[in-house]
Image 1 (spheres, rainbow, N blue to C red):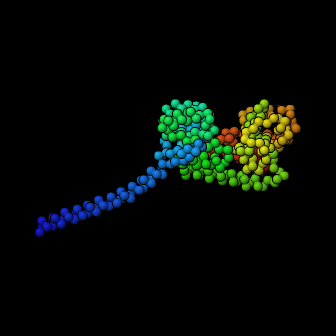
Image 2 (cartoon, one colour):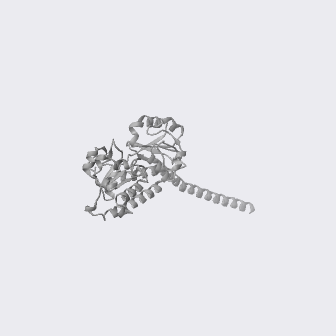
Image 3 (cartoon, rainbow, N blue to C red):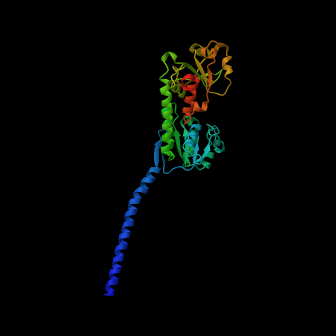
Length: 316
């Protein structure tokens, strides 16, 4: 009887253990798909400015940025610690000066490779100058993503979201873009209150005499002027264009905005410009070019400053 009871207890224990083992196996099967899904979420493939598919198997821990706008986006997404290399042109935020520099528009591929990055964020505007460096970096087995050279807000938003996806900061990127769009919408709403007869003609000067350059169609500044309810006097031109002083006198802007470091008194003292409305009425303003030309999060600050410079009575 005792012997039979012992066998029964052993059999019962085996059944219980088998059941426990079965449950663990089932739990493991339930967990495995979850782990696979997590890995899949970390792996991302995106097409860059070259229309080339770039795949990252996991979230990058070491990032090199080859353009100040990329760098500002990286900081905005909370990736300061992951950023290990930048260019000598990077100046914002202030802590970027502590980062290793890997060249300027001409990239030092050896320095980049030596930093052992998981991801290099290049830029479409430097492709002609840095093609060989890009090849050298990629031949070293490093993922290199060329961000589009944005000339409008929508492409800037796309750049931020792309960098967010590549770095595992998708939600942060979406939040940044959402905040930017909200500020832009508020400005455009105020622009609707400006009557057609009150719309100001604006001259944007991005380079001083004797090589005077302005911005025409297909540039951030042209889009910004439209957003704030102003007219770009060079709006019939294409891209960044050089114009003569005589041509600017003919265009006769109501407001002049400069986006370079220099003394605006030089404009006032140009003999040929003395009859321009903006000069006579001293409607000359200077804006930070890093806010108006870099397609990053601060581009909205540039838009706000432009709006206040042209229409202080509307936007202040």
